[in-house]
Image (cartoon, rainbow, N blue to C red; front, top):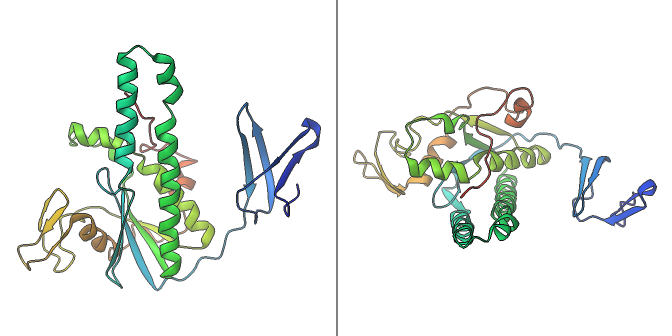
Length: 262
């Protein structure tokens, strides 16, 4: 391994390749090869966790922007990933049209194209959220959405949205990227966060992406209102350093993303 030239070499297999991932890893643990890719597992030293001056909240959605970030200390809001739904629908319609025409070989060829694009998008969104936390010297708060797919009260349309978009994938990406940068990440209960007014605390009315509070007259984007509510909530537990992905090694997750389907 030549870290200066970004070269990985396996002498016994007469294999040599360059890499373009981060170059501050301590060692290479494992390399797996197939006909197209090399899968490289490396060890990276974790940064010491910072003491945040504030908390930002990330509201994850199945429609519109898949992540809305709010910083209550500055009042600033970031809306990320609006194109995700379009990407899902685009490739779903392409596969349906090809299937109707009997072109099953093409269906098989492109079946993973949409999920790969979404995976890349989730990586970029997670990176941007962690960078926002770094710039603001802030921690990250998320709603605890474990088991959301088991709720039988969801509408058919909402269940389809849950099926095609991976809450859990974006969550995992945020967790490990935050941990590598020393950014604390914790979870809060989602109860009433989308219904309470972030200004006065009374229950308001949410209509699609619009929130209106008749008590104080506050009007806001519904996701932004929810984001400000969660940012002020107390964590579910004090063990901020433990990630959901760490716990899921020992027990199955009910919110693992499923593959996109016809």
